[in-house]
Image (cartoon, rainbow, N blue to C red; front, side, top):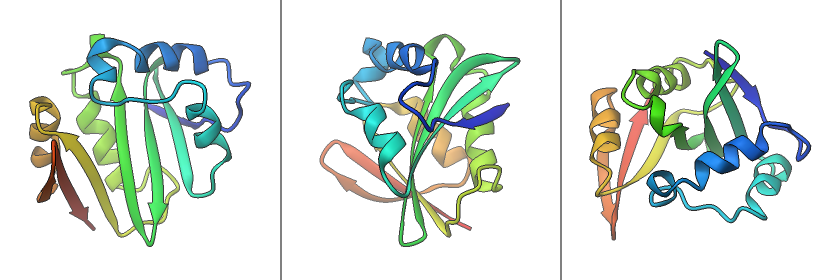
Length: 142
């Protein structure tokens, strides 16, 4: 897999990424403001949005924010490619430092109805730390 930082609002993959974000099966878990989101991820300090490709095909993205050595992650894999091991590989790549990010801890917040994601993060070693409304928070410490 290849990770490429989305660094410009002129990136030609933004329309395809937006189309994935707006799919009902994705937007129910990852809701973005389509007019402001890509500006935010390309212009905000300590925010990184990586496009993920396999064999030159865009398969998804990972949104990362760092604060006080904690990495907050939101993972997106195109629905037709889910459940093929991509999600596990991406999370393990992040844990193993494939992305050039400096962190000690990773935190994710997952909708309590998103059972596949809950199982995925538990499987790769994340620990449930709290429940906040409809979200379950998980942490991974190096």
